[in-house]
Structure formats: structure tokens, C-alpha cells
Amino acid sequence: MNRKSKSDISRILQTHGNMLYRTAYLLLGNPHDVQDILQDVLLRYMEKSPAFASGDHEKAWLLRVTSNCCKDCLRFRRRYSCIEPEHIPEYFSAPEDKALIQELYALPAKWKSVLLLHYFEGYSVKEIAKILNLSENAVKKRLQRAREALRLELTS
Image 1 (tube, rainbow, N blue to C red):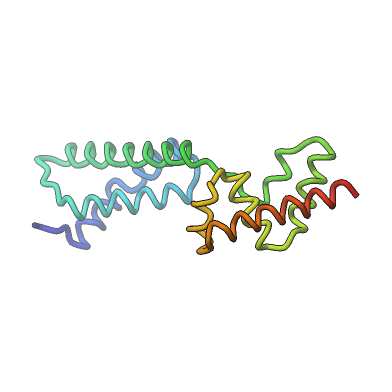
Image 2 (cartoon, rainbow, N blue to C red; image 1 turned 180 degrees about the vertical axis):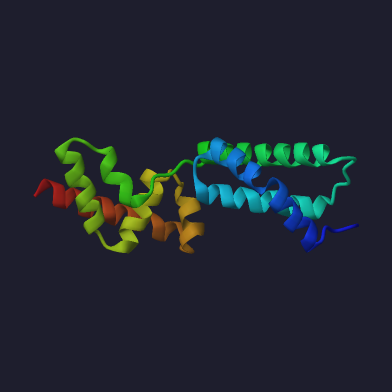
């Protein structure tokens, strides 16, 4: 299989780099995701090593791959949406909700992590056990203790 060389990649970036960046940025709106997408596009270009009849075909192929990678990224975001922990208080306007979040952040890390993964990220006990490298029983116990600690703090 004929692999693309560094000079081919440099030429692609010089010729089409700005256009690909603008296209991905318009679709995603996040410069960090755009950089990841452009890396994926260049990797696919190197792996597939397509032969083009003209520069227009190359440009069209690069745009299509960029567009498809952006769609995949957006689809992933929709399917696995998550909230950054530091932004959680912004989603709650009622004072009692803010108090709950403050109490949640005051919990020990081992309890807080299972609560965040379970209630905010939507993971099951089995998935949390795999993520944290714990037994399912340990995850259940941590959830129970965290709930009880929150209940005691909020009722006192």
C-alpha cells in the first residue's frame, strides 16, 4: 500500500488547511474538537492513500471526510452528553438545589465520584464498577453511604 509522505501532508495543510479548519469550526464551534477532527482527516488521508485525478477531487474528498468526521463527533456528543462538574451549579436556580450541590461537593471524593457518575452522567452500577475498577457491591455501598450522608446533611 502506498503511504503518503510528509511532503504530501505539508502540501495538503498549506493548500487546504484553512478551508478544512473553517469548515470543521463552522460545524463544531469548538477549536479543540476541530484540531482533533483535522488530525483524524489527515490520518485517514495517510491510511487510505487515495489517488486523485485532479486537485478538485482531492479537495472534495478532504471536505467530505471532514464533514463526516464532524458529524460523527456531533453524533457522539448527542449520544454521550455530559455536564462538566464545575458547571453543574449553573443548571440549578432554586436555592435548595444549590444547597444540594454544595453538599454534594463537600462529600468525600470516593462518594462524590459514584454519585456524579450515576446521577449526572447516567452510568449504571456495573459501568461505574468498570470505570473505577471496583466491585459492583463496593459501588452500591458507596452510593448508599453517599445518599445517607446527603440525607443527614440536608435534614439537619
